[in-house]
Amino acid sequence: MQPLLLASQSPRRKYLLEQAGILFEIVPSQIDENSFNHRRPETHVKKLALAKAEEIGMQNPDRWVIGADTVVFINESILEKPTSKVDARKMLQLLSGKTHQVYTGFAIYNYQQKHRYVDHVKTDVKFKVLSHEEIEWYLQTEEPYDKAGAYAIQGLGASMIKKINGSYTNVVGLPVCEVVEHLMNTGVVAR
Image 1: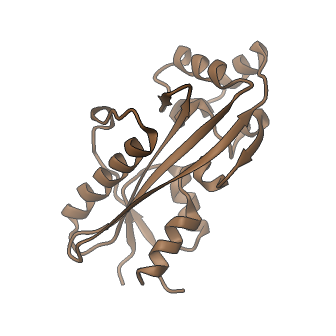
Image 2 (image 1 turned 180 degrees about the vertical axis):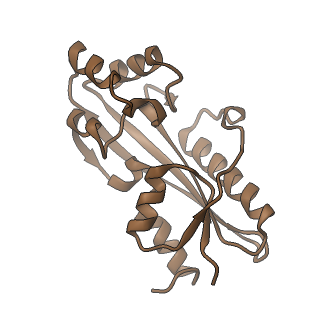
């Protein structure tokens, strides 16, 4: 069987799939993520994950494709990747001392086999109260700028997190347990 296609250039998703022993190739989606603006985070991430998977799947009709999207949700607002240092600062100030949710939608798609599976996973993450100095220090690193919510749980951002309730890999960017379970249940990867 040919390797799966990952419709993402996220180094975190790449790492997680490698750790799970999944054979795959990276074919990043070119979907304009700004054209997706759903108020409900679970709808937002599922629609975007499916759009990414379908785009790559239609270009490679005989291949299995994984699409994914991750957002942070707090105070009825979706936080994606910050657009600037000012934006990242606002996000970290908003998350400071509070619990937020991380949603990752994932889609497993095969055009030829008419297989379309979409789901999402939600994890609660509690931040400690961040001082002005801690936020400014973190903003000087490269870490906040390509992450939903402006932090990386698997990196320096771990020092800001008091606790999580739910899937750790979901917060990193891909709920590995759920993705692998579906791939096994459909026979895409061996048990």
